[in-house]
Length: 251
Image (tube, rainbow, N blue to C red):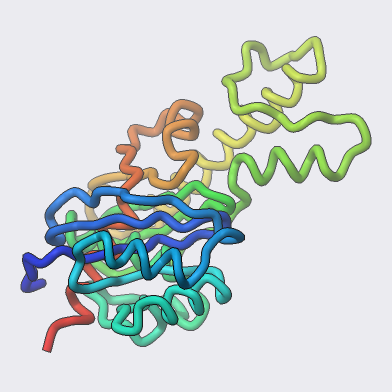
């Protein structure tokens, strides 16, 4: 059980492309996003200014980019950075030295909210699919290209193909290149998502799967493509960061 502190905490969710900053009053309160800064534009001075204006008395972060992690640590010396040694509110069978901090945060909120039998899929530059099994253990997951990463890679690796948009395909037997890209990339991505979720659900062990959660920048788009009954929560990772921040500050 987590003993919640009621002081405001500054949260940083640092992905491959940008950093989301938010403030949350407690582990149960809705994080309020106060800034989003591209990794290339992030500086120590900007983070210090944000921290000062936020009114927060503590800070926690999940970061998957070493340069960005260095800036966050320099700007906020008392920062609780999620890492391999961070205290957790769930058991795990994964190699924590290789598990991304964002995946750990996603599992922390899954354990906090449901206890077990949850799949969390996070759709950003990369897409991660992680399982908190029936025993409340982080059993592992899968990593795939993000939807836009897949579309961009196909265009970059060919001479004439444009970047596929993320609209639903109007027909599977496409009669022009743009429609064919929608069918293959966007429609095919839905198949990737439903296949991985099905495999992870099978691996969850005894008990009915309680929930499937989609988060990340492309979560709503993918939810429209892959109709698998997922709840969409763009703030899920930030909520998990707050949970782990609370644990890190316990005596």
